[in-house]
Length: 109
Image 1 (cartoon, rainbow, N blue to C red):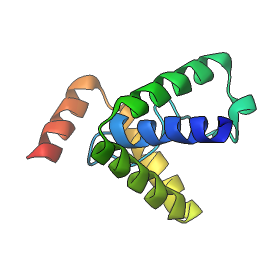
Image 2 (cartoon, one colour):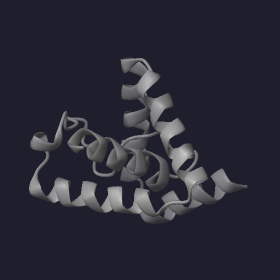
Image 3 (spheres, one colour):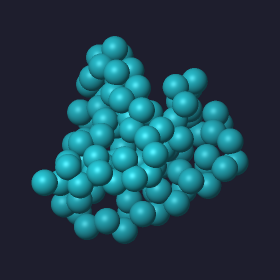
């Protein structure tokens, strides 16, 4: 149950929070660590994981399957590719808001 809860929370983070052209990585990820289990999460992270899990549970089945496919794809990436994507995502997150909006508009065009 705990592992499924954390996994589902991460699925939601990876698939719904990120802009389409941005690489995957949880919001606020600093590159220092990713929690390995429920006990590794801070109380704030646990609350966020629970909210994400609840959002995941409310998604239509087809959207949940897409989230799961995205997560499975993420899991199969080599470590170096994940690091590259996290780095790209962090650079995106560090952009000033206006530049990020321009990037987002360009991604949807």
